[in-house]
Length: 219
Image (cartoon, rainbow, N blue to C red; front, side, top):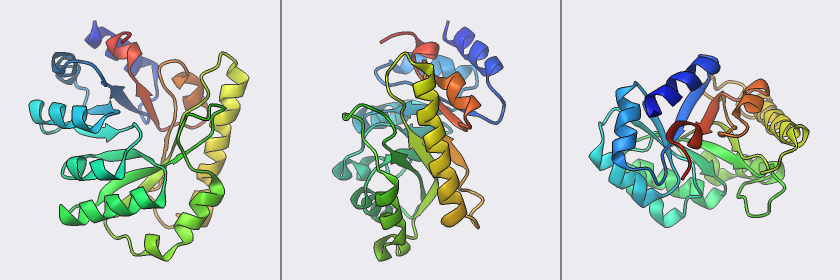
């Protein structure tokens, strides 16, 4: 069933869009089935769960940390994480840089923006990001690589509202690209869209979608 769902999903999205299989709470056997079908990008919310799965599964998997990340947990994923989507403070960014240096790595990250109605969702606003990118501390970070932005739309039925939130994230991305990352071709990712709204997200410019239940079934 997982392989069937993956094939159906991959056939419905453009080739240039990276499909991240959100495997949180799912057993290793389910991830292995997806892997056997060719899936290599997996997204986890919790550090401990990601570490346990990384130890048990093939080493060519590219692990995406998509949940809220506490600074004291960065050291556990620093040796292997492919991309951290949820960087929402300068403090966290500095800790990732520190742990990347310890592991002799450059860690790829996305800046998470708060675009939704829900107060419970994490994320920066544009003013905070401008302060971060203009800071001397950031300029001294040589072991992180900012690839783009991430955001989560409100959990609502109103498609126009969801589309407008995705448009907002795209416009933030374009502002940052023009004013801060014009000479950095690697700054090209917009991580937005999940099982319920990825089609709208792709229409609005998403380059990465984070899909769980449409692949693995409900939790």
